Image (cartoon, rainbow, N blue to C red; front, side):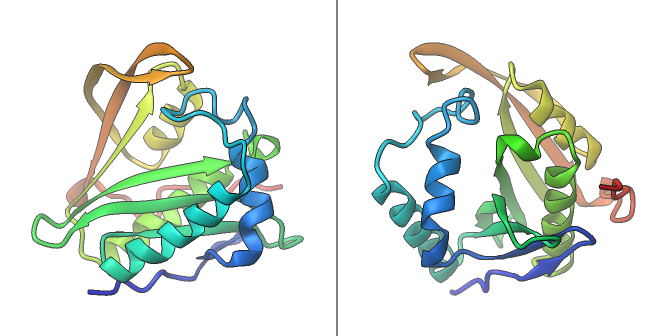
Length: 190
């Protein structure tokens, strides 16, 4: 079953399927050691990783297991990151949210805005009942994004990852359809 990757618009962002032309910007994002400091995989050192990531985006859509979208800033068309819904299970009506944003874009509400748009699509189009997300316990900014869009911290996965050679805990967040507030996220002014 194919899951069509959406094209979504917000006041400041356009979320769209990845294309091969995104490889350089995607590689720059994922090779940034500061951006990747809380990830459970090291920063990329080869551009071919970006090409494989884009191919994987197509594969999860073709298999019907999720959607991963590139995020462009409307004002100049610049690629600023991505967000995704993966592990979509139509029987359980659940999926997992993930995202990554360029360091220069942090603190401006872009990820909150993008994730909110993707969640609206997930609840309205996919008829999800639950979306789950995980973040490294040291990543307070990511936890704040999740809380702003309505997620509730449900627990801690102790020592579930090794990040840069260091054992790390993760917080598990959940958002249930009945708690979803589709109009609760204000769009900050630039």
